[in-house]
Length: 326
Image (cartoon, rainbow, N blue to C red; front, top):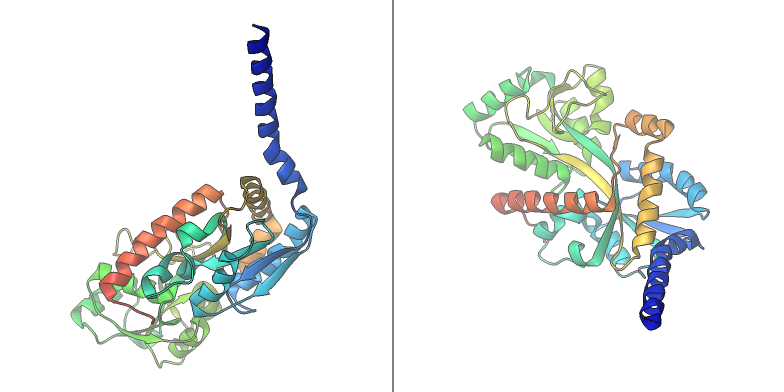
């Protein structure tokens, strides 16, 4: 009986030690600067969000958070670096919908496997897209646009931010669900696409909100619909695509933080909690929304589930449209 009592006591002590282990690991992390590899060049929306968050995270973590821009190959270059980094929480990746969900279908060869090589940490933000038109396009609403596109297949041209981008895939999803065909005109980013619609060179575009918002408010671009599942606070009178003729349509750009596979749970939980707290700060929320970006933090588990659902959705769109980038 004494031996059984001793074993029970030992098991209780061991269980207590294991229960405390994540807390100790979390308390000890980090002990040196943390690098966030951003898969976009400086100046873009993702870069702006990370640079806004970095000082807050540095303060909360007690170590400097360094921003390292590594653009290229639709985000594959930067995330490949993260995939090979030690799984200790000191090298993190900031990837977008393309690299974390669509690129596996767009590229014949990938330098990483999202499901195997990364641990989701937290989604950061969503960037809604808006379907805009030049005033001369001849429609005033999204429903009128649908009717025109169906009546004159192939006549309308639509600009977007580049082949394989979330804006390109948003356009493809729209065409597939509407059962219409548009002539696509790819640009190097939302800004140039919006400017050519502004100048009348292209009648329509699917662009991110930051590129179009000022022109919409000035009455120079017609906002026909937003691609997000809910209306936007910046454009409360503009309906969603789902509301205005294509039920179930949902396409939003997004980006979030991932860590190398094998990163300890306690480290992931600490980072996720600090990111969520930072993105709840009213000052940060206001700064993001002023740029047309919507904060969208969440748990590591929720972000992982979202990546899986987005991967399934976009792989189906890519297959049907037969889009290949290499």
